[in-house]
Length: 313
Image: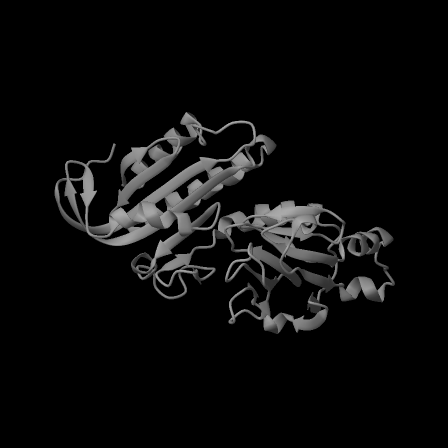
């Protein structure tokens, strides 16, 4: 166990909250004791002082911001591995990071800012990692890649976990239908009005805020609910919300996306915060056809068309 003498320090504090929702019964231990043990052990190996490590939360101090970020990434990876088990899909892990002056007293940190972390963690997206402005400032411009994204709070930034991207992309693309080809344009339709976007228009923000390129209304929609990005010759929808997004894929499946990304291929729909069948707000319809497949004469499957016709109100 790392020991840090009493005194004044500048460093980073990580606060992680673990919860799990199931319909049958409340979950007292969202993380297993072995998962907690492994995370606490890593925190110590990273020269951190782990002040609390339980199945419901983890609280640690690090002299270096880079070490705190490494543990945050491992926590996110632990959640991703756990949610691969269908019985643990309700697992919700939220991590918040801060940096500043603290006083160390008998193995605990005291400051005028660390007490805020427990309250602010509820503003972090589900299964996400976020940081206060002072923590982000510890990294030179461009070192955090992808760059931190603003949240609904001006002092809180979302930190994309780049090491999770490949696993999520593979899983989501696999169940989203065929995605071969080069995607040049994307058509989005809200209230029956189409908008056509190219890769250079990305990122395209979707939400209630006036700053969003695609505005939607609805009680389940966040100010900035999600965004569309273009990479590897394809358009992706990325959920940034607290309520999640239901995406009707080109293959006819309706998927709940929480802080994940999914390829937009064929014809489908993006439903903020609620399934299409229960959506009382606005839905974003999308159409995206790969040019390579179009040149080869590929046709859209009739099943997709029927699905869209069924869902249209």
